[in-house]
Length: 208
Image (cartoon, rainbow, N blue to C red; front, side, top):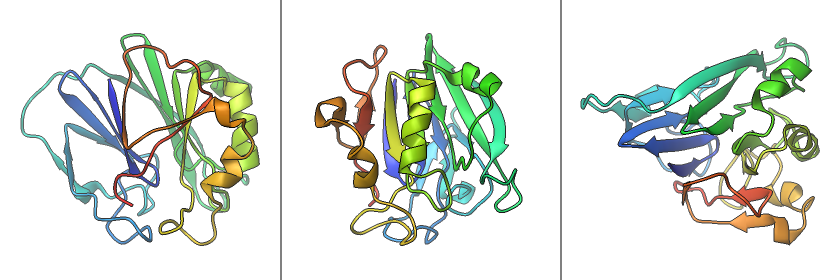
């Protein structure tokens, strides 16, 4: 299984020739990111804001391939006021070959225990850390402690040349961990089995 990080909250997950893109951003919706313009077999979105719902940026493949993935969703909120500020958000759960990848979207609240149980111990957790629109670095740190993924990939943060001015930096989050617990990679990683050895995997945004 291969995971590509384009930036912001957008990832591609590929296996056996089938690809899913999650949360494509609309061109111009996030400062500093190049247009996406990618191809995939399927597109999933956690909610309908432009920085997560740029469906027109992804060209669907016209080649029919059976999906190796099982997809489920947990409906939650984009804020801590039960959606009154920013609406709902969906946590996306993708499984294949006994591995579970969880994308938290723009989650802005805690999860109830019954929903935590559905994702607890997942192999990969993609989690926002920037705050303001989502949970912040401290909340993400505590949520990771509850979910206990094999590794967590931070997303939806501000970098030197990209991201919203009002959200926090990656370093605010990574400074909460020992450096030995952090794996820093390029834009693509391959998973043959459950990740081990690092609590956090920092991926380089491909489109920044």
